[in-house]
Length: 304
Image (cartoon, helix red, strand yellow):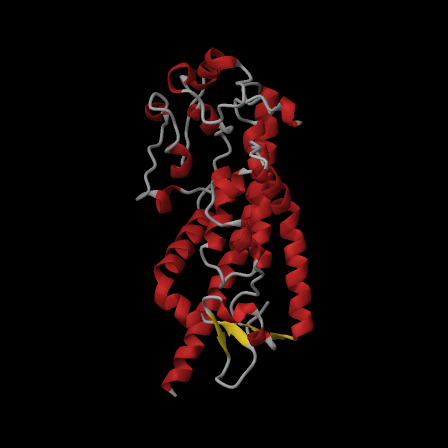
């Protein structure tokens, strides 16, 4: 939505309900499993790895610049960074200036990371080997998903790692490599070099778009956040299909990246994710441009 959009009470409540229905498609099965102490190797990831809780995801946010009519009489009036448009108004809007005063450095970091990632060439030759590097020498280190068998066994997994070039550019994948696999990586990403190494072909960089969006709540609309969430959901599925784990009992066919056919399939899917993530990065940057526009306008008004 553009700045200065105004939604009636009935309009924004309908959008809120639609958002909650969309989120509950993913949240309710997870909460049901959790209540029974059950795990899912694919579908739990976005709720356990990322720090955005189901209750937070369920909160619909219109994004910066959208006026919600008669919203002051609802619970969102108490939510952080929501404010009345005037002292006597019953309408709410996102407090852009307040957010930037408190978290402006986060906005700058995300803008820089997302814009520079878009500008770099994509690497489509990693073949998801980061997951294999995390299970390398499992006879010594164990595996992260202890309840899942390795499709090729420990020795077969090690052979795949040793017979391929490992070129992982994503720090938050690299940091889970086993001690023996770390030195095999042609790149040595760090937290400090993250902004200089992210590239648009990386599946984990695509998943992290969800993280960068929710870190900017409520500036970013829930529509964009959920589009990023659903991309991350699809990426996680492929990430685990291409991993060394055997997910047959969970209904997932393997993408056998140790074979030419598996590599070709992985690259095909990877290119599709890169296209989807580029569109989402464009939308995220457009949202941040709108935030900057609102902040500049507010500054001019304060000086007049």
